[in-house]
Image 1 (spheres, rainbow, N blue to C red):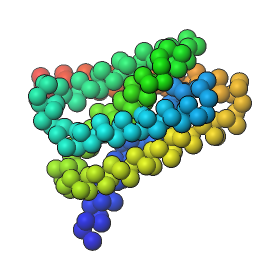
Image 2 (tube, helix red, strand yellow):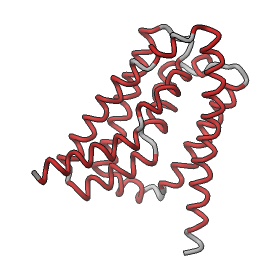
Image 3 (cartoon, rainbow, N blue to C red):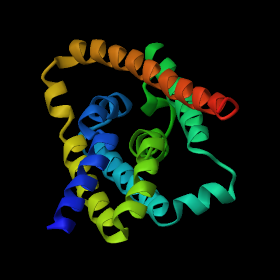
Length: 198
């Protein structure tokens, strides 16, 4: 019973931070203009890459960050800058798919920082030390499966809007992405400043 409760708790914690339903519109924004089969390939590849990134951090994340002298706030700032660049391109009317190959998009920004971002990395390290490696791995596998199903089917609703509706929505997503990226940068900078003012 205790293991069951720990498993449910860990799955819910990772589900919230991965936020696959919330990321579905952003995934659509980054893969718009790409045919369905290629979009599905990009999504599957990004989920798989995110899985291995989070698995790595679940296994040796604390040691890895310590070795390279990287903090989670460094992750936030770097991820925010990357997303902001893509957001500006989207606002100017450039599709991210035109600016980089599908292989590049699947890795950055889809796999990281959108899925395997600083929040997810933090949760993976926490889950390992709180509930053990087995519970953490089961939670990760469950959430990656949920993310795959959610993201791969996320464009069906958006397709009902038609071409003009999708175009308007893409601009809105780009602005929201810009705001989200600034929030990541702000959080990273504020946390960094707070280290000097304990």
